[in-house]
Length: 456
RNA sequence: GUGGGUGUAGCUCAGUUGGUUAGAGUACCAGAUUGUGAUUCUGGGUGUCGUGGGUUCAAAUCCCAUCAUCCACCCCA
Image 1 (cartoon, rainbow, N blue to C red):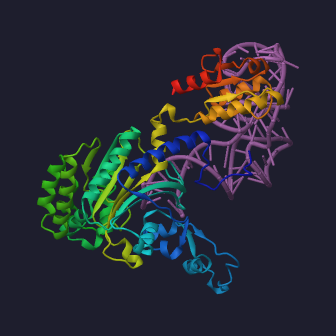
Image 2: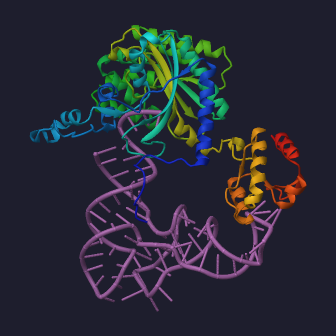
Image 3: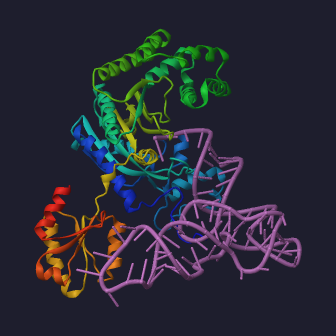
């Protein structure tokens, strides 16, 4: 059929069934955030483009949705500006706002702007949609929700420990088996220094990051293509091939990159975090992964990534420490660390593994059948009593055929139907139908309330 | 931005070497049943074969273009 109506590529509608599950997910995450003392904030869907541009690298700038200026947005564009090369120039002339790309940069802006009103260390959570003009594919949408939790204004590594605890809590409650991968930007730069390529840190790390996916040989190929020497690769090999448990890896790293200032510092930080975690009751597997880099280059310390053990969908949660993020907006010395839960991907994982609990549906518990004008008068009174007893109830709005009203209850998954007809009103004893069993019984309104409360 | 797959009923899909009126399951609607849903039985097709063009006596089928969607790469949640 020809698509006359629709929604933009990579966006989605959510029907009630999906929303109930999504809310369950958000509620679970939110409750954990609150349990650890994080406070909610929200920021606008749009930010000034100047706030967003240049924060996510060249690639990120391309993926920003830009909003056209109001009014005659072409007024500042001269005909001779039109051409491929001045595209960026024209963009800044016709657009000064953009949709947020993540929640971290707006948060940094928020902190700088409201620094005098905030108590530091400031612990905040933020659950809102973000937009990226990416090409959609599996697990990748153009509009998706992030659930960010950050603490800013504290250098303590206890924050990193806390984040891992929260990650563990959330996924424990959602019944998703995960691996938490940890690395440290300082370890990565120690590696770059060790192989004598400190300037090529970004090229090195983005290639190393693919180790899991494409294997070491392909990583080396890519590195050589980017200008690394055979000698570099040779030095890199033992680092890439680290094995054993976390302690083992730490010892080896100490030997291999411990002589560099950054490397030594990174190892110490990693040790501290892992030691704390090992003494706690963490269910998830926590794994040091020296190849973990992640794209965002504002990380300065810990790097965190969470993967589902049972579903291949990429990372479902990630983050790290950033020392200088607010300095772009004029506030330095404000270190922060946080992670972002990818709600849409977590949803997909739970859907794939069938992990949503049965009882997340909060639909109507009892439907009152509409038998006509006279009966409705009485039904409304009953409805009031039932609802005030804390029961989710509704009266069918039209006096349609009973068949149709029954079907409505069936399709909406309403377990009980109360028939309030002439006879019942006279006797004060109503015909209650249990949709699941098909059995019917006569009950008073008090008995009805009791029955529903017991079944809860 | 690069490469590949798929577009037929609300949904999932079948449709032969091009050949008469495009089909199944499911969903939906009506009735069996004017106080009973799901189950059962009976009846009903609700379609611009994504769109535009071309080849042909004849196109859902072959060719070209285009759009949409999915998948992979880059990058990322």
